Length: 393
Image (tube, rainbow, N blue to C red; front, side, top):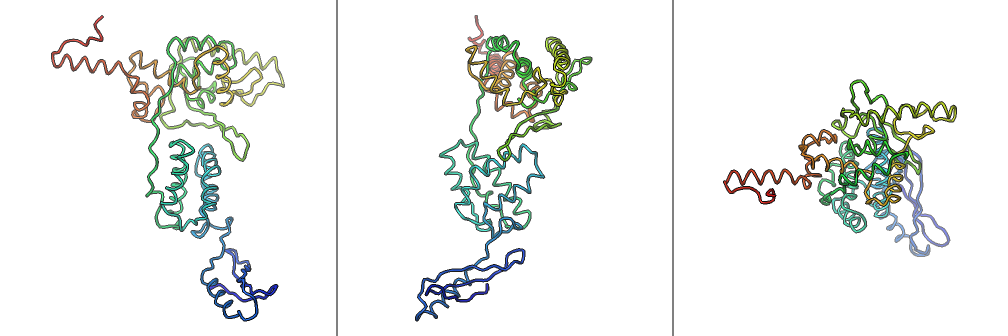
C-alpha cells in the first residue's frame, strides 16, 4: 500500500500520498477530503485508507511500456519502436493515422492498455465511420492491431482485443480510365510540357507514380531494349515537413519487373538524355546534379516530385478540357486498353506488377467483356444452340 498521512491546510484535512516513480524518484500527491479539521479526524483517516487502497501511481508516458499506462501513451511509445522495423513510408502513415484520430480519441477516453477491450475499439470504429470512408477505418484497424500485437508479444497483455473486433467491409474500387481517343488527346496535350515523358511512360507501361518518378537512366538498357522497374521515389510528411524517400525497391517483390523498350520510347528517351546533357552544360553550376541519375527531372535538374506530377497533370487536363481523372488512373487506362485488345488477365498482372492474379482480376474483371462473350459462344456451341446474336452483323 502506498504511504499516506493527513495534513491540515486552510482549516481542511488533506490526504498526502507518497510514492515512487518507475525510475525511483519520490513523489507526493495531495488530495483534499473537503472535511473541516474540527471533529472529522476519524472520517478523514477513513478516506485516507480508501485513497491508499485505490491509488495507482501514474505511469510516466516516457517510461518503459506498461499495461497501467494510457493506451494513447503506449501508442506514442510503440510508434517509436515500430520506426526501426518498417519502411519510412509505412511509419509516416502509422504516425499520421495515430496522431490525427486514434491517439486523441483514446486519450480523451482515458483507458489504459491493460483495460482496453474490444468494445472500446469497436466504438471508435463506429464513431469514425460517420466521418471517414470504411477503407480509412481499415487503416486505423491495421495500426491498432499491430500495436496491440506487439503488446502481446512483449507480455504486456495476454490477448489482443483487436482480434475480437469486426473491421468494416472494404469499399469496392472502380478506377476511371481513358479510351484510346482520350489517351491520344492527352498525349497531344502534354507534348512539350515538363511532364510529357512521365505521363507517356506511366500510360504506356501502367506504372505507379512512385515508379515513374523513381526511374533512373541505369534502368534503361538501350542495347537490349529493356526498361527495368526497380526503384521508387515517394514523399511523406513527418513532423510537418515533406520528406523525399528514395528506395531501391518496389511496392512488392512482383512489382520489380523488366519491360520491353519499344522504338517510340527508345527514341524519345535517347533524345531526352541529350537534352539533359545540354541543360547541364548551359546551366553549369546552377544545375542540380543531385538527381542526375533520374529520368524525370526539369531543365534545372530538379526531380519532378510525385505531388508535382499530380498537380501539373490536373492543370493540363483543365487547360485542354480533357475529362478529369487522377494521375494514377493512367495505370488503369493502360490495363483497360490491354484488355480491350485481347491481352489475357495473367499477362496484364505481370505487366502491371501486381503481387497476385486476384488483385488484377478484382480490379479489372468488370472490363473483361470480351472473355464473357467468348464464354457465351462456347456454351452456345457446346449446347448446339447456334451463334451469339451480338456477333451477327
